[in-house]
Length: 280
Image (cartoon, rainbow, N blue to C red; front, side):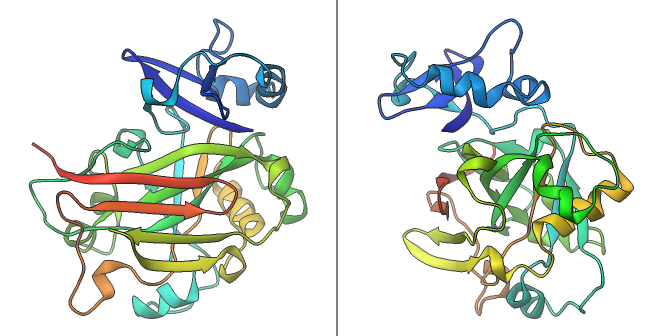
């Protein structure tokens, strides 16, 4: 099953994607995908909908971020050794953590925006972990049971603003720079600790490529660490880090330009694709 959030005639909806199209699962009880994650019913609702005729064709909808209203978007920096080395960061005992706001996100096939204040928009392919069960101080051995599913993420970064100070927040929160989707695949479809490959393509050229087994801090370790300082709740998103090969560390640097096509592909999830446009 592949779950998605989308809009139809400017009305936000959610459902599952099938070979025939999109089956809406929106209801008064479950107006958003997150609401169905919160009460644990999303997988059962998806299974019941598998045989239904599609509500909409894919070409009739606009993709939204998989979770449109997360309470928290927690991003992890320098979580692949190649990226840590290329950024000249010291090894640390604990993950590097920063936050995104929901307003900075966009969906699959929507324009990723270069703000007028910068020309240094960079790509970062990542795997997003969507929390399905609340918890505080979650032990690593229990972490998998708190996961609802996984998605692809492009943690677009406005590099000069990221480097204004040692804090990442400004460069990570410009509007429509964090692409999220197209789908969430439930935890049961992807085995716990299964090795997944992820890559970035810019105009068809592979720029980043790695597997999840190359992470410095594993997904259970991230869940344990993050849940120590904050309570994780259903719909929270942990964006688990990017591999080496980012544009800012190339010679010369590679910045995304208006009209470029950037694609993030993750095994078993699919391709998150966005054109680059200028914000006006």
